[in-house]
Image 1: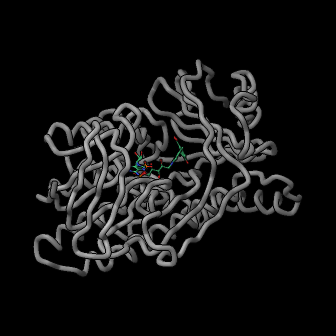
Image 2: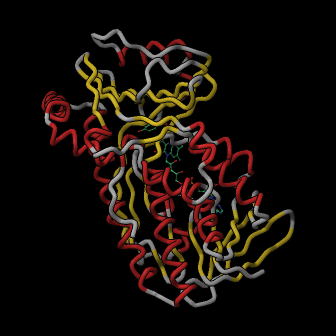
Image 3: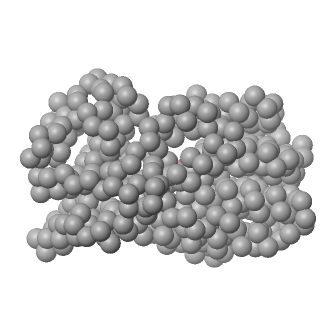
Length: 393
Ligand code: FAD
Ligand code: PHB
């Protein structure tokens, strides 16, 4: 088999890259180890930056997003028993965010690819990448009992944090920058109408909590827990009682309760491997970088990366231009490091670290107080939250 770009991984990064390349007349084959059902059901991120929404709509995969996505103009910070609204739209000259589940983006992109009859292999195994130091890269894999070898011009490593692409780059060629956090998030989806229209991030003595949503019928909620926490220790009653405690405030607002449809625990990590290119292998999305979810940036960074990569590849194929590909890593890393800082900052401001002393606690509260009373500080949060405009030529 031969193609122009072999794409490893059918998460948001791989699927959107395939779609953008197809629109530019460039052939690609996508190889994914999981099943279609798994990829489409995996509950993850929910906040799309305006730039992410724009890319999906401009490229013809935003029809359902436009109908079902919930446009939000603000978020709330809750601490010391009070809620404070940050008006994202007013502070950023009209920008907003859209709440639309990552798995819905994945469903829309899979449907578009299959409707176009373009190659997408689910449930592949033994996926290996080779030859990317030469001009004859190759991806090999097994699918439905048959061995496949895919020769290509470029490999896009879109296979997430635990994928094979980054791991195939020779040790010593990548610089890794990393931070693990001493806490995790327990997330639930509840069959309950969201009891407010916007997200609420709460800093409480007992730890962080987040109120979000997926639709007018489904609420998404998160609680800070210990990194080694077991779900077995969290009965429904305990989850609701802890949520009510952490969201309590003088306005009496609380999330509505409902049947818990899904639950999971996610560890928190910051991670960047650079450069994001090795020869003819380009890393994109979680394969190259991870952020803790507090800034809602992971999915948006993946989309920004592949937007830059698709344009650079289009220029290479159309005019033999190398500049875009040569600049790929540096272009993406500007946005990545801004998001790394923002996600780390939001995480540090909102979570309780085990054993933290009163000094750190008072600094957190002072910072929160500053963000909700200073227009300059609120603007800084807002422009990062809706997404910085740089980095996408
Ligand atoms: P992924 O979505 O990870 O996609 C990579 C794909 O590659 C997967 O489908 C995987 O099965 C496939 N793959 C892996 N190895 C191979 C291989 N060897 N060969 C072929 N295919 C392979 N972000 C937020 O903003 N908010 C959240 O609440 C949030 N929650 C998260 C919860 C979890 C459990 C995780 C892991 C991430 C979460 N994120 C969240 C981050 C966000 O979901 C990611 O940033 C986003 O999925 C990145 O997209 P991606 O396409 O780069 O990677
Ligand atoms: C979500 O809705 O899943 C969500 C929202 C905001 C975040 C993280 C996750 O910061």
